[in-house]
Image (cartoon, rainbow, N blue to C red; front, top):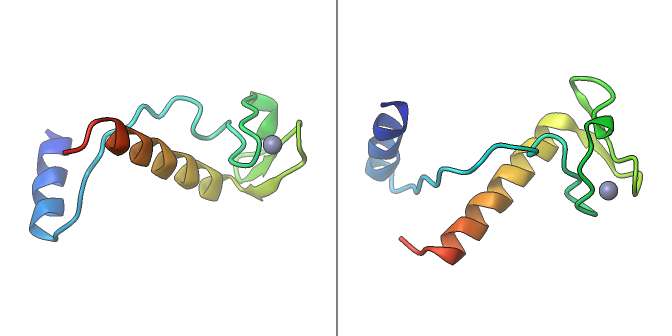
Length: 78
Ligand SMILES: [Zn+2]
Protein backbone atom coordinates (compact mmCIF):
# COMPACT_ATOMS: atom_id res chain seq x y z
CA UNK A 1 0.00 0.00 0.00
CA UNK A 2 2.72 2.44 0.94
CA UNK A 3 4.73 1.56 -2.16
CA UNK A 4 1.65 2.00 -4.38
CA UNK A 5 1.06 5.52 -3.06
CA UNK A 6 4.76 6.33 -3.21
CA UNK A 7 5.02 5.12 -6.82
CA UNK A 8 2.02 7.27 -7.84
CA UNK A 9 3.46 10.35 -6.13
CA UNK A 10 6.84 9.76 -7.73
CA UNK A 11 5.36 9.30 -11.19
CA UNK A 12 3.40 12.54 -10.93
CA UNK A 13 6.65 14.28 -9.97
CA UNK A 14 8.57 12.69 -12.85
CA UNK A 15 10.58 10.48 -10.50
CA UNK A 16 11.33 6.79 -10.47
CA UNK A 17 10.84 4.35 -7.58
CA UNK A 18 12.91 1.18 -7.31
CA UNK A 19 12.31 -1.16 -4.35
CA UNK A 20 15.53 -2.67 -2.99
CA UNK A 21 16.43 -5.29 -0.42
CA UNK A 22 17.53 -3.27 2.63
CA UNK A 23 19.62 -6.08 4.15
CA UNK A 24 23.15 -4.96 5.07
CA UNK A 25 22.70 -1.49 3.58
CA UNK A 26 23.72 0.03 6.92
CA UNK A 27 26.57 -2.43 7.55
CA UNK A 28 28.34 -2.63 4.18
CA UNK A 29 31.35 -0.39 3.48
CA UNK A 30 30.72 1.70 0.34
CA UNK A 31 34.47 1.87 -0.28
CA UNK A 32 35.63 -1.76 -0.02
CA UNK A 33 32.39 -3.75 0.29
CA UNK A 34 33.29 -5.28 3.66
CA UNK A 35 30.09 -6.13 5.54
CA UNK A 36 30.11 -6.46 9.33
CA UNK A 37 28.01 -5.27 12.23
CA UNK A 38 31.30 -4.09 13.77
CA UNK A 39 31.37 -1.39 11.06
CA UNK A 40 28.69 0.38 13.12
CA UNK A 41 30.21 1.22 16.50
CA UNK A 42 27.31 3.57 17.27
CA UNK A 43 23.92 4.39 15.76
CA UNK A 44 25.28 7.47 13.97
CA UNK A 45 28.80 6.35 13.13
CA UNK A 46 30.16 4.13 10.35
CA UNK A 47 33.76 2.96 10.66
CA UNK A 48 34.88 0.13 8.37
CA UNK A 49 36.95 -2.41 10.33
CA UNK A 50 38.58 -3.56 7.06
CA UNK A 51 39.68 -0.39 5.21
CA UNK A 52 39.14 2.29 7.87
CA UNK A 53 36.59 4.30 5.85
CA UNK A 54 34.52 6.56 8.11
CA UNK A 55 31.26 8.40 7.40
CA UNK A 56 27.91 9.21 8.93
CA UNK A 57 25.94 5.97 9.11
CA UNK A 58 22.93 7.53 7.37
CA UNK A 59 25.13 8.64 4.45
CA UNK A 60 26.50 5.11 4.10
CA UNK A 61 22.99 3.63 4.19
CA UNK A 62 21.69 6.07 1.57
CA UNK A 63 24.70 5.44 -0.69
CA UNK A 64 24.20 1.68 -0.50
CA UNK A 65 20.43 1.91 -1.15
CA UNK A 66 21.04 4.14 -4.18
CA UNK A 67 23.68 1.77 -5.52
CA UNK A 68 21.39 -1.25 -5.04
CA UNK A 69 18.59 0.57 -6.88
CA UNK A 70 20.83 1.50 -9.81
CA UNK A 71 22.03 -2.11 -10.07
CA UNK A 72 18.43 -3.36 -10.14
CA UNK A 73 17.49 -0.79 -12.81
CA UNK A 74 20.41 -1.90 -15.01
CA UNK A 75 19.40 -5.54 -14.63
CA UNK A 76 15.69 -5.01 -15.32
CA UNK A 77 15.02 -1.72 -17.14
CA UNK A 78 11.52 -0.34 -16.60
ZN1 LIG B 1 35.86 -0.58 3.92
